[in-house]
Length: 182
Image 1 (cartoon, rainbow, N blue to C red):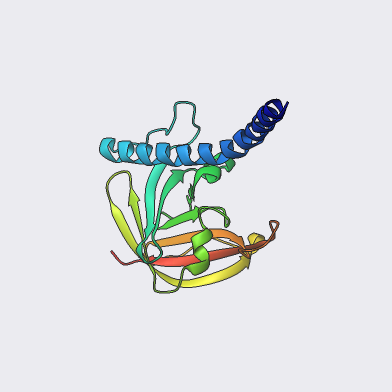
Image 2 (cartoon, one colour):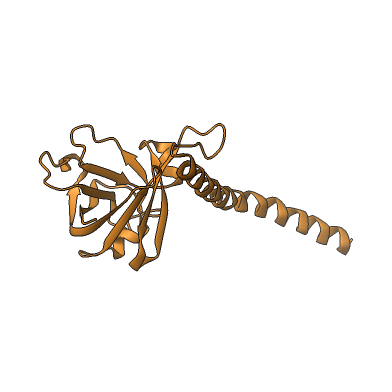
């Protein structure tokens, strides 16, 4: 009887542990596949899907050396894309503007430590790399955020929900504005 109880307890524990480990395992695998997709896209000069049934493709790699950040950026800001990493929002109004967004509790959690003067790099799948200096940070209501109409230099906007430690989504967004330097 003690052996039967031990076996039942072991099976029950496994039944609880496997589903709990499933999501983190899937997330880790997705990041490996995204990394591979970016490298494949970089070599080919055209975007590649990270897995055959994906509705997303990679468009670049975002790095902030001071913070140890290296994130694969996905093309097209959709719910699926933002589940896997930062995503690029289309900015048809101004070709000098790149707008990236990600969730505050995962891929853009590091934005809480981003400061004016930090250097942010964006490597695109065509092999080009643009370097930007963060010029200022702002907190705005989501419905008050507007893309700048007139830009004199290439600009990178990084946006995430705010405050960082909030338990639920609110109306505020934290936006970093960075100007291209190279």
